[in-house]
Length: 313
Image (cartoon, rainbow, N blue to C red):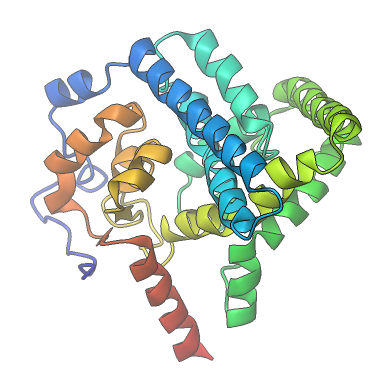
């Protein structure tokens, strides 16, 4: 069972009670590695390629949907290396984070240049209803709204709206992007959309069904996996700046932790964004007893969210 939010330690000064790790431990855990990052990135690409082979062999068979769902899971999980790269913790070398993070962001239209600024604002203002961009839309209040959220409808709609405004050089509602950053973000979005359009057109010319079976439909099928994970990170947590209680860690099964680059250790990441993915399990061991929200799995948290919706209905 997920423990309730604990009372603050009265002996710890206000604003400092989420500083749990000793400085020496933090320095050690914050050491980054090109080798670790390249190995995990290569494994992720290998999983995408292996799933693509399964989809190719499954064409015309009853297990094609299962193969497509697996392919989609690995594709939407590219969000994880993007997330690490925009924090520049996936690799020690800065340009590897910037280049490989941008590439990983293309298949699902995350766009690393935009997301870096969006996500950094989220970290600065986590759970602040006025300044956290992740809270720009209301949380689901009905089962229908929940279903739309999990299906990814809001994500797709926001991509169209946000990129449309960026292409028209309109930045209303995007105060987290400073004026000096806007030309670079716009060039990045244009390049991404051009690459996606070119890839889709070229692939369709060679194999009309190819981009639908290996890319677009799999991503749509697997989007609920990522949406559920993201919805679990802060929902039903405290609405304040206490990193020990405003973020949830989920003790997901090891395949989920592997594919998502240890992203389920989300409270640890919010407390210490400098810690790279491969050291988050160790950080969890050191801070777990201080965390207010540790869930046994994503289904557990989704059940709690649905229960809250039902009670308010």
